[in-house]
Image 1 (cartoon, rainbow, N blue to C red):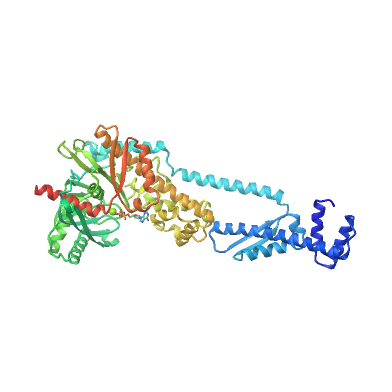
Image 2 (cartoon, rainbow, N blue to C red; image 1 turned 120 degrees about the vertical axis):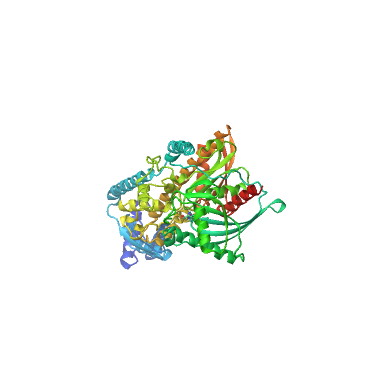
Length: 588
Ligand code: ADP
Ligand code: MG
């Protein structure tokens, strides 16, 4: 007996389970030069059936595995799909197709499968493959071109560091201070804690997401510790954007409520006021608000001393008296709270709603304050870096859109590329652009995505988490009302998020590199070991922000060995410590 196509064809014919089938079998066997009995013919037919059934079932089982994989990739519960099939066995064998279909449907009942016979798969198909590949490559290139505008090269980051150094020097010098984009504000904090501070203090934390009142007990000596109690209060949009008097009356009401809650009604304690907005300080307890940021807009406050506004409100209420000892920026509080644990900590950094930094500068360089001895902490207000055009060449159309739609267009340009209040908005703007160009969500622009603020920065953290499966990314998108998203959409959204947050962390790293290198140069050192106290939810909760920041620092400030410390409640504990240091110095 020979072998080859002829025999395969025989298997097809022989498998027909009918009288005619048996006649065919006999004919085929005779053509092969054999002389079969009726029993022989039936036996041969049976063998053919077994072999072809096994083939169809094996084929079906493998297809089922493929379908399951596709279903998981797409992160859908039910897959609807069409399978294109070609080949003579499938097309000509009387039972093969039916058995194959049955096996597939039995093994993956949760897939709706349609089988489509292909006509000339290899000719037409090859052309289709080429056309699809071409379209995908073109779309990929189009997307990457957009994302590339959000990617920064090492040279660009070096340039950011260099420009930051220039602005820092300009902010410190008397004759250029007023026109510098980075204000380098003196804080009158001259020393970090030495452990001898003690007493009970009140602290206020205004300028973050939450307004808080705190009672802080600082112990020295063997029982050296800091104990804190705090209560969170809300500040409504109305109060944030109403009059200054309303805002400060509200704050004083919250203090009164807190004192009562603590069983300390009427107590008079030294108070540290963490006020995280740019202030011109003429002393530790004098803070003239230069400009509201982060959505605050209460009237009659800019140009006023916030310690006086607070004291006035306290007097209006006539219930208790408080001594406002220190007006504290949250960066300074963060640095101080970390310095209490690690004396090498001389820099404070915030990456939360906004971003800002402070560090211990040589008094001789702080030209706005008399005296050349020792150090003073400088509140950089680095969020405004770029307001003089320093970032124009790296700003994208998305940054411009976010800026234009903010409460302070043209201001805080650096902050708008880095902090929690804005990263989600940048991502949303990129997604809008991709959708409009037909590169995402099948070009369907959902109403939800057009809503400002809908894409919160916390979603970046969730989507970028390495532990998250694509299925979960998709469910976040669904939660956002982006129901028509596919698996490819999820991959792309994740890429957009990571490009945006990577840029934020790198920019932050480039600026921090300028700070630590300045401290190193101030001290004429070849290498500097220094710690940075960091606070802010974005920094703390984003899965990659801190490691990218650290990596950028290593790259851009190789002569500095920087340890990043997470601050525990910098704005509360730090404000109390600054107040405690000030009381210590005053009483000495
Ligand atoms: P603040 O800086 O106002 O004191 P936070 O440090 O708590 O307050 O930062 C609040 C900011 O953190 C918000 O703008 C929010 O977008 C962002 N944020 C909240 N949760 C997360 C998260 N899981 N990942 C990243 N950012 C977050
Ligand atoms: Mg804060």
